[in-house]
Image 1 (cartoon, helix red, strand yellow):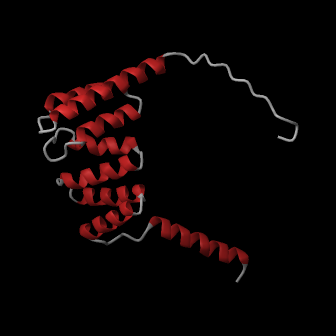
Image 2 (cartoon, helix red, strand yellow; image 1 turned 30 degrees about the vertical axis):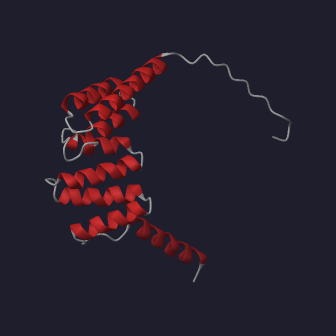
Length: 168
C-alpha cells in the first residue's frame, strides 16, 4: 500500500473518531455517553451530545441544564448563555442558572446586560440561601462595574522590546 493511501486511511479514521458514531442512539444512551464525556473532561463533546438530547425533547429543562453546564465548563459562554437563558428564572429547580446566565454575559463583555441579569436574580431568588446569593451578586455587580471602568480606560503602558543577543 502506498504512503498516500495509508495517510488517507489514517485521516479518515481520525475524522470518523472525532465525529463519533452516535447516530441512531437513543436519548438515554446519548445521555450516558455525555456523562462519560463529562467525567473525562471532554466538555465540548458532552455538550454536543446533550444538545442532541435536548433537540429531541426541548420540553425537558433538565436536558437544557446539562447542555448549559457542559458548555460553561468548556468556557463556551456564548453557547452556554443560550441554554441558561431558558432556565434563568427557574430558581427552585436550577438555582445557579440565573447567576451563570449573568456570568456568561459578563464573560462576553456585556457588562450592562450582566448587571441587569444579576439584578433580576437578586429580585427573584427566594431560596433558603438568599443571603449568600445576595452577597455573591453584590460582588459580581462590583466586578461588572470594574470591568466597565477598565475597558473604557485607555492603556497607557509603554512596552519596550530588547533582544538579548543576535541569536534570538
